[in-house]
Figure 1 (cartoon, rainbow, N blue to C red):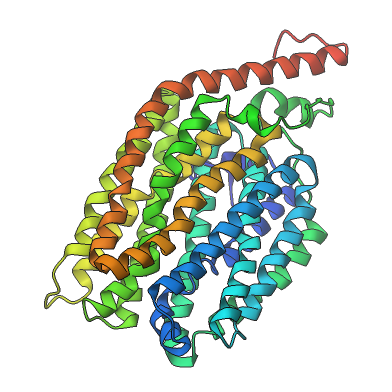
Figure 2 (figure 1 turned 120 degrees about the horizontal axis):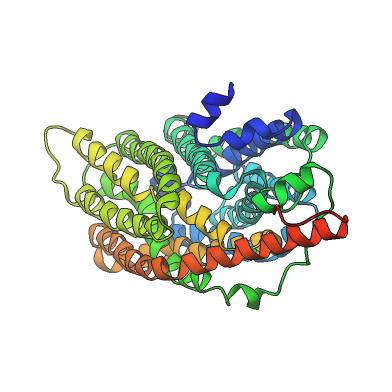
Length: 453
């Protein structure tokens, strides 16, 4: 692809990478796509699994929650490792540890076996979060991270959609186990290729103050990662953690139970309900891309504009989501609910890439694996508790009430982003000052004039 094309996509940094780095980025995306395909693969066939294994919504919610919670705990450890060791080696082992249980889930013969293998699969998705976060921060400069996260998020979203499409299409015909086997296999090919041909980017090379120095071969000394406590001294980090749990509760409950709701309560087929969910996923892909492009421009206008945009889109996304749950069954079938799902997915997902870019930009490069793990932990608490909480609430109050309750959490998250609009400008400036000081120190160590930096 030519340079103007990459520029239109918002990731012109790709043109400055050598062929091996471009290949590494491509393999990272492909591996992540198939790893993420496993994330929601249970949901289209939830009813089939419950009937075969003789379990209820609560016990199946436990499966999804345990999968996510283990992933969050793994991410805490992996985040520290990503800041201290080779991220390339860590990525290879992470994917292997995640895909083997995914493959073996296809051979589960009891609820206990299903729970065991699904929990272990959390190693892959949970461990990949801090690794990819750290790598993207070094592949791309701050001005390009919104778009880069948007495109990478689109790949992850496409993976989720792929998993649900495969599960929804194959599960009712050939059984719910086969999709796990099919979607685990590609990474057993991609991971060895990644290990053989793809170098790891140098830590800190995405920072404008250090990028040229590292390109010229001037050594830049980066301190070891700080303790986790130092991350809590950044006000934007604290508020981001605070909004993470309520902001992700809907993302935990809605995918887990919306298909079951449309089948059991609204009377649609599994295929039709899955189609609506796929449309929601496609809306999320488009919203993520559009949000990343808009966010990249807004952050150039004002450091407060981006968090305000994030909060606004989260809040607005709740309204069409309420309509998806409440829209009455009519002669139009699944068409109108699917349009509403498309709109809900589009608006609610515009925040995602901008949240990640903002977190990258307010933290130093040696801490990005750790901050991704902590950020992912708060998200995982929301996503992980979502299916379990949703399953319990569904038993107590019904699926419709539960889904509306989940959507209301987006309003809480949106309010916190108003506070982040006041803290992020100072935190962004603090990172830039630190990077400039490190560049000056590197030039002085080489006996060069640090004035141009």
